[in-house]
Image (cartoon, rainbow, N blue to C red; front, side, top):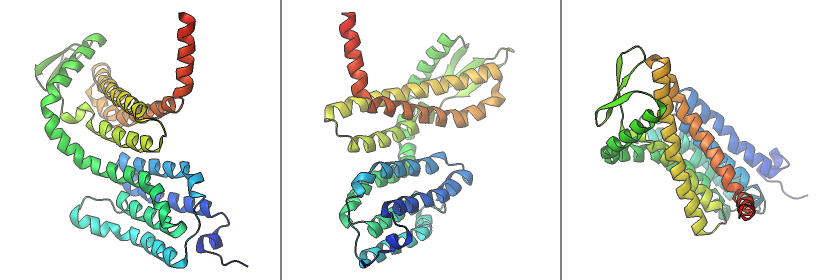
Length: 297
């Protein structure tokens, strides 16, 4: 009778146990990241990381089990991951109790527990997604400072969009709209660098890098689709800001907060889903377009 490893003892299918253990801490992240702190991306991004792990199931199935020493090392890292907060909080007091730093250490330990060390390369895209997204908050603050001079240009674009929509808005200063409400009142609305969609751009850039690293397409295809995705993200942000102005104009200023808080998340997730659906079916779509073009000629 062969010696059974820890995962095999707990569950017959080693991969099922691996994915169960990878998913379980996400419940803590959902609580500490979203329910307790209302930090949407802190809860969302690790879920994307988990989905990437699911996609790699066939690749992970070829790796053999490791000896007890590696299993003990991995188990130690997994347990230690629950105490990472105390190290992170020393440098960043606002850190959540169980967040992406904990989960990153946990995933590394989980890989070492279940697979050969060489399998760690399969965790790279997941860990990159999680770590890069965490850093995006700091990068976003840095970009806000340097993109502040571009705010007046964004205001000009929005002024043209509002004119098309028939909303009477004037630019009282380079960063402020004066919106004449239906009741005759004038509402002054300021535009900041964050309104340009910096954080949406950063998040999309991180996700697209992860996806393109896994995609076998040539570099030219990846670059073209990446540029198309960035342009699409900018247009989605234009739509988001326009929708906020429409809500303010037709329903009143008191209702805009709900829209401002939630609509960005909803639109961005919908755009991500649509973009990657089209990207995954690009060959079939291109073939249909070529057929249609030949018929039209």
